[in-house]
Amino acid sequence: VVNGVSARSADGNARIHDVTFLVQPGELVGIAGVSGNGQRELLDAVLGVLPLEQGEIHIGGTDLGRGGRPRRALDAGAVVVPEDPVNDAVVGGLVILEHLALNGQRLPTRGPRIDWRAVRDSVAERDVAERLNLAPLGRQVSTLSGGNIQRVVLTRTFLVDDPTLVVAAYPSRGLDIASVRATQQLLLERRAAGSGVLVLSEDLDELLALADRIVVLHHGSVAGIVEPSSTDRQEIGKLMIQGAAA
Amino acid sequence: MTALDAPAPTEPSQPPIADPSPGDAGPAEGRSWLGIAERVGRTVLRWSVLVVCTLAVFSAFLVARGAEPLAVLESMWTTSFGTRDAFGETLLRSTPILMAALATAAPARAGLFNLGGQGQLLLGAIGAIVVANWLDGGAGTVVTLVSMGLGGMAFGAAWAAIPAVLKVVTRTNEAISSLLLNYIAALIVTWLCFGPWKDPTSLGQAYSRKLTGPESLPIVWGQRVNIGIVVALLAAVVVWVLLRHTTWGFKLWVLGGNPSAARRAGLAVGGLSIAAMVAGGALAGLGGMLEVAGTEGRLRPELLAGVGFIGFLASWLAKHDPLRAILASVLLGAIAVGGSGLKITAGLSGAAVNILMALVLFAVLGWGTRPEGANDR
Image (cartoon, rainbow over all chains, first blue to last red; front, side, top):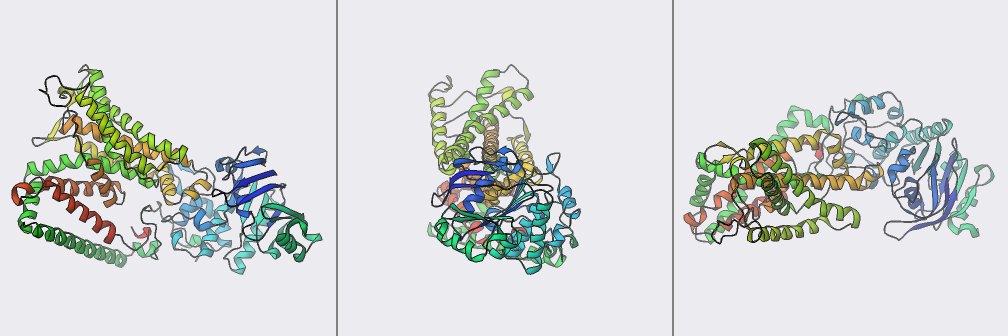
């Protein structure tokens, strides 16, 4: 639940204002908007990165309070594909396996050490890596292309079992057609399994194909909430550009 | 090729914070004999060029000062390594340098600049003497020395906690605040030596009483080398294990490599930052205890002058790797000891070796940084 949320980016230049919408379990909600209209701030607010100026966010019954504490959102069952994987997910020098452990869940440990076998087993037991055509686990992430980095963050997100909320920012960015389809299928499977799914995208066709409802952002505020069955690209496009006045 | 086609590493790679540049050599290449031979060859060649260039520039300085380079370098070598006692002096000088280097390395892994090693060394020395004064010779040697070590670590950690907390709470630059705390620590030492701790038998000299009996580190080699060097080496190994093979170390790697990613992965960024700085402070504090209970035996205003900064250089020379820091500390300790003979052999100030230290630092950081990524370490 995102209820009347206002928040400002760390540099103060961008903000969202009085944003309200609901993502039910087993529902996929899309966020549409021209880049720079508050998508990143909304994502950061939902993840608990940004402190809230007002409003409240609940994930699976957990109140995130005033925000600013990502651990709280993650413990509530949120998993995230970040908007900017290179800056917000890639750690220089770490290999793919190590990045897969950084999925927001508690690190698997064995005594004082990280249980890397458990991470590898988690990959082996699921078909996510194959479906997304993930590069070998020993590869340095910093040597990968943008598309392969996207595969890493997608894989680590979909390795989490039964998340309460999946937040995916531009999930198809940089991927080939086959991987785009695999990603969309994985998102739909999460929805079918009962997770709430929130997808940020500039690709209206993708949102129209996947979403149960689409929240359109304009200048950091909700310009409208539409259902794909009763709208089209033009209407959403107008809301994105002109806001609620459209 | 998919993820499961290739074997994953049994242990994660360890990224150098200062060298996050991407490379193109994959793990498979790094494991092949040809790849290893090529890397070793490149490394040997690079370091050979570095050593020759550094010595050439230093020799040019010596010539400009009217000294004979080969004679000076030979004298420095003899002073540092020429005899058993000379090597012992080098080890003694290297001990606090190594502890200060470790105090830099641990926070550096979390992306923090601990420039306060100097002050933390001094606070560690103070903490050790506080405990020694409190025990007043009433405990055995082991209990006394362990207690003094813990006291030194506690004082050093507390001193390092100040910039760490300021960093987390008020976003104050930890490099500046830890640096400025060095001067406060030096003033505290001066005050103690001139004031409450002044040795009444010092005949006007400003220093504390001599630590004796169970308050002194046992000699383990030669005339002067005490057990402090062993403790420092053990500390380096422990820090290396902690950074490389524990969950805590991995978290520090992530934090130092990308704070935003660490935060979004739910890591306790503030707590990790404070812990890294406090751990560094504790290591420096232990170094201060080793110095005051070993080589020096008492607190003086000039105690460990500049050692914290040399340790900072040693950590950077080692790219914040605790085991490499051992070699870097011995190298800089040897240069420092070698400088003591310059006045006699070349009529130069002992401070001339600072130029050699600076050249070494520039050479390693400027020319010694490999262009490859971290994965072929």
